[in-house]
Image (cartoon, rainbow, N blue to C red; front, side, top):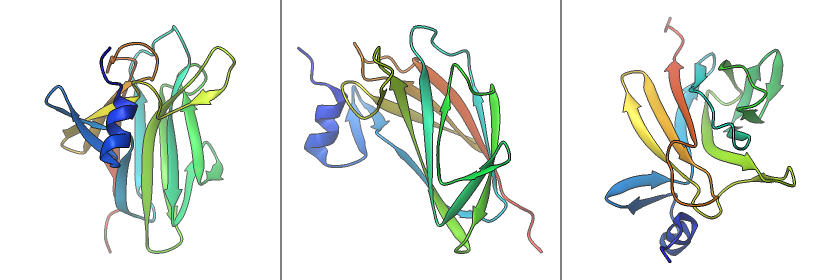
Length: 156
């Protein structure tokens, strides 16, 4: 049986491992996001087999999402808008945002970081694309795909 991504992360004790010559992340960090930065998340067609999501957790502030200030939010593929804009409200000059994939199991429990869960991060000119594999079954980086763009506020 092939080694699971979660085993590789545990052995490396690191958030990034190499799998089949590809860098795979358990979570992705965006440091130094200034107050007013916008994080635009656009989901491709979700996998209808099970609800999947992106979890966003911010330190040093909150995210304004749909009129609510949150420091931890899950955007679910079956209930979230296809495009979500989260505005950084930094309390310390800049904030750090962590992003990772999650999913709900048949008992409706949120799961993350187990089995074959991981993400490929593909940089773009103004952000990146996350290709996520949930923890169930074989590795498949098409389980959830989201484009994330960062817009920083204009300077004085």
